[in-house]
Image (cartoon, rainbow over all chains, first blue to last red; front, side):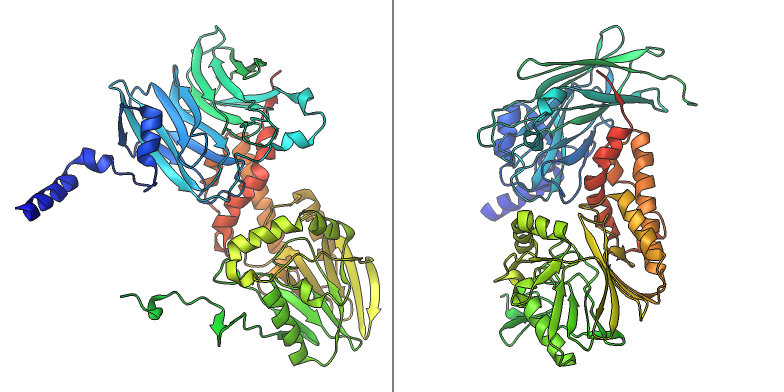
Length: 259
Length: 306
């Protein structure tokens, strides 16, 4: 009797897609804890349509590039990027208000482990994708390299950006800001990081709302695919860090695919 | 039940209770011997033996160019030299500050260990970080290895040692400082890591513009034999041309990607074009090189905002 029940349970796991979708494909030891910490009682499901790409081996654990592409899902409300093995789990959040559910940036990794993204759909389900990145340790507890320079404060908040019109009418936009993105975990250096970065159209309407957190890499570069109204002259960047320094500026938009 | 037969055999070999690289010097030109490293990444499988180490008899003692990745290697190197020649080791020269090239040096400590001043300084400053990294990657083969920085600045220029007309040429671009040895009599170049053959060049401390200048300097020499830092020996300048072609392709590919707005993670997914897809470990080195080079290239493609 008991044996039959065990077999039945095993078979149900095989045929129940939801059960299969809740088994961690990256086999991370603390997934249940991470899931509960970030998403509490919300439903989470592993979903191959949330594509996360990152290098298999992190050459520089203080700058591990990743890209999240959830365009296979409809109506994504929010994306949360996180790393299971980091002392600070959340890397960044992003609301694609008038933007594709797509973001590329870089993170610091304290040790090798999963880099994941969860995309929230209107039914309240978080769809989770991720990859495993092998890394040497210490990326979150080492000081940002700017602190070795005397004049870094002179450049704080300086930004560079550009946009590229895509074939589907969206605008690829990259914004790079000069900022230490201190985690607060390096000896004697308090947390100090860009905590909000909004990308708006020329009328001030938010296209993408990004909330970076401590693990984002120093001098962060973020790439999104936004959808301002055709003909809009420029994007407005409006951000601020945890010391209330403002990061503001504009970057022009080009609507001529031929150029 | 798992038995010893299922334990992975670690190459090179663990023979009679000793770890051994099985070093067999090969005479590639008159009195010039090569210990060819494996065209792989540092691993416990290869014991870190991935660089080409060379030595030459002169009539007045052996000139040794680089010392390998570990103490065990250094000891075997010393014994291998003694097997092929009665000449004592007279000069020990370190090409550049990458640990697969100089961590056998402690075995030769009774002699001065020579290098360019910048190479000595880098090893003295951050050599322990490199050694730690070697311990992490190469594991047990590093046992007993310690950082020994060069302690004598080599004077670039021509020098007659025994019967050899040598020239020590100070260059750079692969790393902070790259020394090569050129034998005028044999038109033989020991290029170290300025030149890679059939193995993807590495860029952790590279300055590509300076590297190209160095390759131009090397290619101007009359060359019968070129010994790259990694990969097979070639006759003529073929290896220099291959290195130049790869570095050009790498920079062009990454610059084009940056100008199209690709993020770093997307650049990693770019294909490796023929013929470079045939280079040993090119997939891994391409990803590493993006980490080294793409940040600056991507910034150059952006415009100031505020």
